[in-house]
Length: 116
View (cartoon, one colour):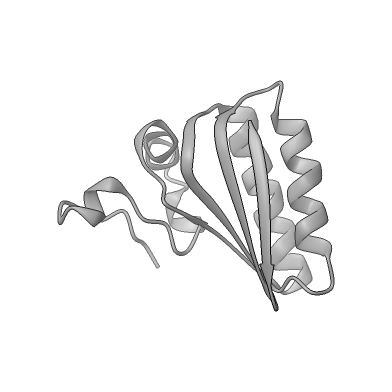
């Protein structure tokens, strides 16, 4: 797993690539919390375009970051969800919790994964 962060004002864009598993999710948790809790970051978006796989430990990290964002009065969203990560979030009925997600289907005119 590789993580890159681009900060532009109050907007933080974290781009993840690779696999998010029980081995990498503790590191991801620490990094995302650091970015989220930075004073300058008010809107944390995680780009999933390079994520090929996420397991339930990674899903737990995302839910924890979402809770931390809500507690801090900040926004947290996922973008470019597709493939197995999108399937896991849809299968667990959690995709609606993360604003701003897009999928291959919504980009190609198929059924949308966007939820309010």
